[in-house]
Length: 118
Image 1: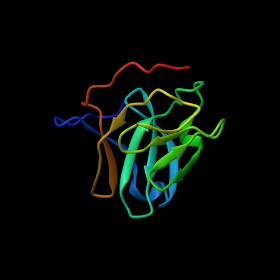
Image 2: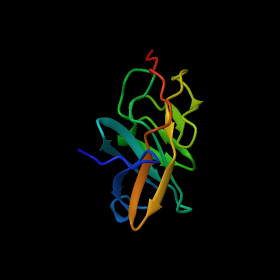
Image 3: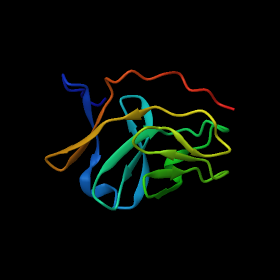
Image 4: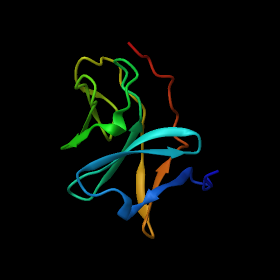
């Protein structure tokens, strides 16, 4: 099991595991996340589920600051979880990300809401 630091951060991946411009599915402390590494070097993390129909976001594409669901093209902001393109209408949870000593860490201490699917 992943060790959660006092400040809520937990290691999600090695910095070199996800190339700039890509998104991947990571399992962190029992949560499935879509972890994105933007071209500018920043990182974002959101829940790994499309609120349109439950699809897997981390298997989609990362374009600018949005993850596009591979099933029907819904787009979610990787930093806020907000819907940027339908058919999804409900947002997902977003999590702060930092990089320390070559490790990408996600803050799981932020309040997360139950997702609405459909």
